[in-house]
Structure formats: C-alpha cells, structure tokens
Image (cartoon, rainbow, N blue to C red; front, side):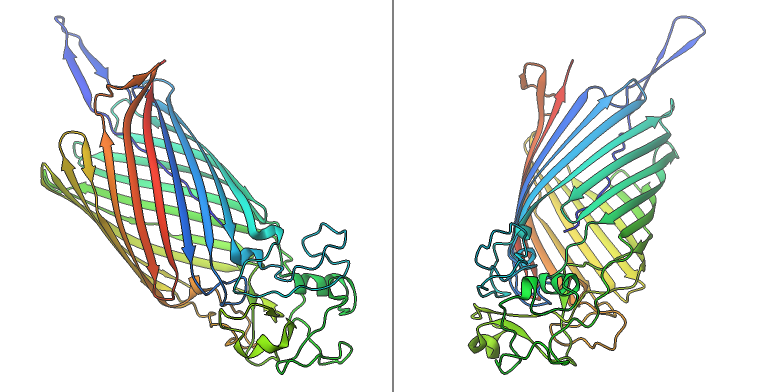
Amino acid sequence: MQKLGIVFIFCFPFFVFAQSNTDTTIVFKKRVLESTELDILSSFYSQEGQNAAVTGGIGTEELTDLATDISISIPLNDDDVLSINGTVSAYTSASSSNLNPWTKEYDGDDDDDNDDGGDFNTGTPWAASSGASRQDVWTNFNLGYSHSSDDRNTILSGNLSYANEYDYSSFGGGVGIAKLFNLKNTELSLNASVFLDSWHPQYPTEIKAFVKNNSNLNDGFFQGADILDQNGNIINILDPNAWKPHNTTLIENKSRNTYALSFGFSQILSKTTQISVFSDPTYQTGWLANPMQRVYFADKENFYIGNAASIPFYTDPKNKDVFQLADDIERLPDTRFKIPIGVRLNQYVNENLVLRTYYRYYFDDWGIQSHTFNAELAIKVGMKFTFYPNYRFYNQTAANYFAPFDDLLSTSQFYTSDFDLSKYNTHQFGLGIKYTDIFTTSYFWKIGLKGLSLDYNYYERNTGLNAHIVSLGANFIITI
C-alpha cells in the first residue's frame, strides 16, 4: 500500500497602512500567521470488494484503516512560517494477508512462510489468512517552510518528507513559488517535487519459495505439499510440465522515482466568482509494478494447493479451501508519464450559499484516460455552522496491460490484473458539518478552539468495491 502526498498552504494577508503626522509614511504589515496553529485530523476507512490484486484480480478486498494526521504551523516572524506534519496510518488488509494464504501447522519457524516444511492448512482468496502481512503501519513526516515578501505578492516555499511502511519507503522534497498580481486578484504558482522511493519487496510465497529453493518442489515451503492440476489430480513434481513460475526474475532495480511539476493560475472574475486552472505533469521511473500482486495466464495450465473438490468453483466466494499457484507477479513498464489538467470554479450565491465545483481530465502513456467531476454546496447556518453536502463522479479507461483473472497471455511483455488499472466508474456521496469560531472565544490554558469538522463519505465502484469514510478534524490556535 502506497500512501504518498505533499500539501502546500498559502496564507494571503491584508495590509494595514498608517500615516504619521510627519512627512514620513510608516507602513505596517500584518503577520502572515498571527499565532501558532494546530490541526488534528482522524479518519476511519472501511472497504469491501471482490477483485483483490494480490490474489490475481479475484478475492476479498476487505480493508480497514485508522489514520491520524497532526499538523502544526509556527510563525517564525512576520514573513516566515514553519510547518510540521506527521501521519500515522494503521491498516488491516485481507488481500495483503494472502501473500501466504496457506497457514501451515506451527513447525518452530516464525517466518511468515514457515518454509521449513510442515502440514498445509487450506487457503482461499476469499478470506484473510493469518500471515504477518495482514496488517501494517504507514508513517509519514513532512517539514515545510514558506516566506512571504514584504508586499505579500511573492510566496516562496519548500518542504522535505519521509514515509515508510513494511514493503516501501519514500524520501521527497519540493520547492514552490506563488506570485500575486492585479491587486491580488490574479495568482500564478509553480511547484516542483521529487520523490526517491525504495521497495523492500515482498513476493507471493510460492514464487519466493520456488526461487529460494532453486526450483525444488520437495524442499522448504513445498515439502509435504500436494500440488493439484485443474482436474484435482496430484501431479508428479518431477515432471518437466509441473508447476513453475513463468518468470523467476524478481525485482532487480528497487528504486521508484517520481518527478512532478505543478502549474496553477487563479483569477477572481467578480465579487462572487473565482476560477482556477491547474496542471500537474508527473514522470515516474523505476520498478512501477507491485511485486505483491499475482497474475494468472489463460495460456498456462492451472495448479493448486488445497481441497480438490473446490477447484470447479474456485472463483466463487464459497471456495473456502483451495488456492491457485501464481503464474507470475505483476510486470509493468519502468516509466510512466501522467498529465492531469483541471479547473475549479467557486460561485458565491448569497451570504448563506457557496457552490464549489471541480473538473479534471487525466491521461497517461499507459493508455488510461479519466474524467473527474466534484461539486460541493456550502450552506451556512447561523454565524458558526456550515453544512456541505458533496458529490464526486469519476470514470477511466483501462490500462493497455490490464486483463481480469486468468485472461492475461504469457506472450505479453507487461501484464496486470489490478482493477485500479481497469475500466470503471465511481460515485461518492458525502455530507460534512463544520463549526467555526472566528474570534476563538473558547480557551483551555493557551490553546483556543478555532474550528471542528465532521465528514462522512460513501464510495462505490461499478466493479463491486464500496467504502465508508468518516473523518473528524479540529483546528486550534496556540498563544505563547
């Protein structure tokens, strides 16, 4: 699971000018940030689906994630702000647990594969196994800095970030500049970022064990295993046509680098209308496939470990006790170029209603094209409360290298059964409520509550995936 992101926060102050009794004009500038601000956001995410990529495009996608994000912005002086952000995300994934779906009887080896041999319990792509990969913690740290010019028409920014989970780590950095013109009615921005990432690769157990045991199907993990053919018959493991991976080459280049530019243009069209246009071209290079994800070929024989009686309904959730040996891991090109182009339009309707809309078109050189539309209506109730129902629609075409479970061909150079790269569309419905105390009247010691928010979103994909997301946020100011 890869969770990577950079947030640039620009604060645009106004100016207070005063004229002294002398001929000298004294200019007073407002601080970019008056006080230290603390933001805390916690969210819970839960999903279900039946197209797990780890098990080749079928199987349970049950996943839960509990994340907390803490950000603190510290004014260093009138012009400079230091921001510190940290995120901890603890998740449990049924599909990831099936890197090793066969849980053997305990044989004294604590390795997830139990590859000293032993009796096999049955596995299935339709239920979580007890493997160590079923849960993990993703952590991220970001350090940012911004400087505003005296006239507040130029903002320079930079940041460094680090993220880590059990199979992946990332180090990144970025710089940016924003310029305001036309009495601050027009803004141009440019940001550049680089992520230098490294895999700590985890592979499907059967493929890793086959390579580790020098193709010996009677040693280590495979010792004591009956390998079955499509008809449920036990095969002769010494037969030249016995199961073996199509490709035994694992990750040779563990790097995955991302280079991104972000262009933005924002214009206030009238007292009630603002529009912004942006583009974020991104280039990636390195190992861009996920080594955890199995693929199965239509032109290869199928082999299994488990209960032979369940093979005829292998792709049905009622299969509880047989698992198909992988033909290979996902393999994709080592470069990818992405170009999104988007526009935002915010319309002030009246003092109680603001409509925010968003559209983005995306394409890349893997064959994917997509459209995203989002609309949110902010409804102000009284002085302190805002409700904001929202809706998001997304659709995309399939990548050139995608095919569903057991439909890929071994003659292809690249292949994946990851449904994130398939053709699909999604709908997301949400409702949020926000409490804002403009004057921060509630204090505990030197900490004042500035705002609270509560959001719920329901997400559904036409492939069968659905998810619920609940988040709670709080914004404080700290006076020292």
